[in-house]
Length: 236
Ligand SMILES: Nc1ncnc2c1ncn2[C@@H]1O[C@H](COP(=O)(O)OP(=O)(O)OP(=O)(O)O)[C@@H](O)[C@H]1O
Image (cartoon, rainbow, N blue to C red; front, side, top):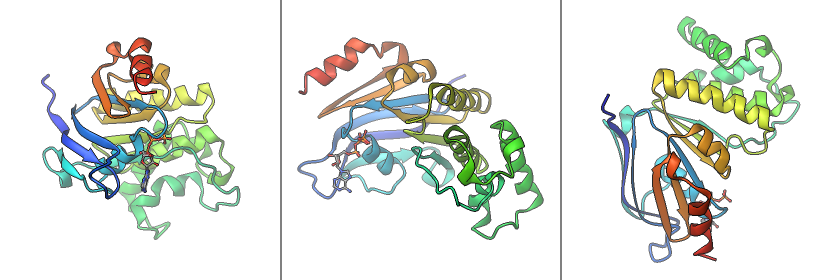
């Protein structure tokens, strides 16, 4: 099967207002449909800036981010970094998973939307916890609920933005096993932003390594510790 591009980044310079001192300069890469791309790099190198540009929250200072077949046709799901939710947060896991479908008019989901929520609760193994308040879920369960919430919208592209950071190793692997299954069975394209090179190597098929003023991309088996440390050290 020939993979078609879903996202192409051409000569992208990105950052905040000042084109003379951008965060990212002249970045070029393509993500194909069905890729599992891991974006790695040290703190402050520009991973979030790149994600915000891809999500069109930040306008490129120069260059382009092109979606195929078009920006409107590509539905993006987003799983954020873990942050604790107040233990008094009132929504159940089920309502939280369906939140973006309702326009906040809970609980008026259509029959088909209710089915999608149920399917994703089953898919993420949360069906027995569906009525538990989200505020009382464990860290791993909360991240699965964020994943289920992103999946009910049937994304073409799923972005995991440090979504496994601060989870224990078992929960990290549980979450990424689910993402791997979605990637392989449904051909949903995945961008996984992480500091964890071992996790990137275990799950991703491609990588983009950002370092100050430079970057390298390729197939995941080309991401070696020597390459990572070499790029970091040449910029200290
Ligand atoms: N709103 C902003 N205005 C100006 N500069 C910003 C803004 N947000 C981030 N920056 C700067 O842009 C640079 C890249 O930050 P960014 O958050 O993209 O890096 P990161 O790779 O995601 O880091 P981390 O791994 O620590 O989350 C940093 O120097 C940061 O201070």
